[in-house]
Image (cartoon, rainbow, N blue to C red; front, top):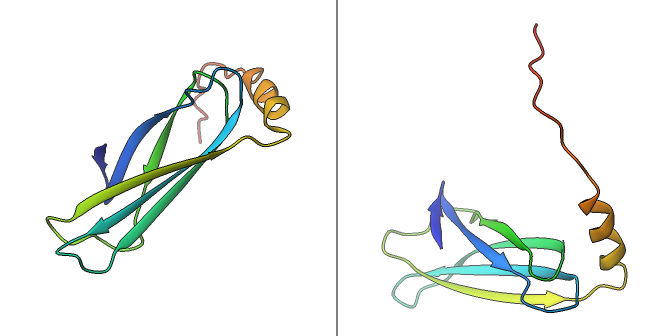
Length: 100
């Protein structure tokens, strides 16, 4: 969990051996048992063994000294494998500067 802007970033790994998963990450920022400020991220179609970065940006700035509770859930969608295979075929070229 790394501070990032006004929120946090973390790496999430699909540890399944054979399922493409959509992974949800939820953060609750709490201080002194008070009400939580929340943030969430969804990482669709993560192939087995692959990592993705989740960036959690709360709707307002958490109070200084807040504790962060992280929860993770996942779902194996019926079409995730096909979408992950299509995404794996995308190739990006070198950046090109466009003059104005």
